[in-house]
Image (cartoon, rainbow, N blue to C red; front, side, top):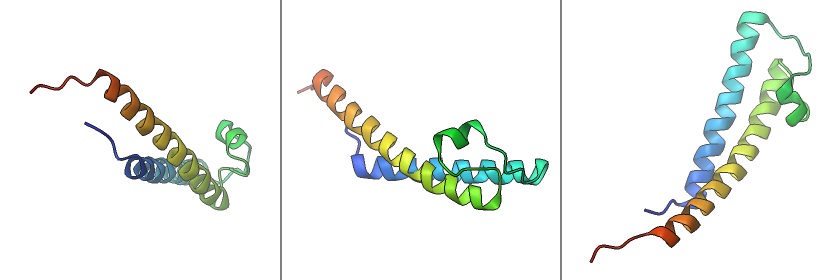
Length: 88
């Protein structure tokens, strides 16, 4: 089975972006908007625990998930093509 690289990359980008966005709002709901730098803020420039930071995190996470998903799907297709056993 081969993965469709663009579809898998887009799916990973959407899920990772929404995940970071949701996590940020979860933290805002329970701890309030702090604006303090976080570990993710070191990776995603401009990300903070704030409403504006959640949008920045959404964009960075979408791009990160898109690239990561594309690399994963491409590698999966390359590796599975080498080890594919066809029953005929």
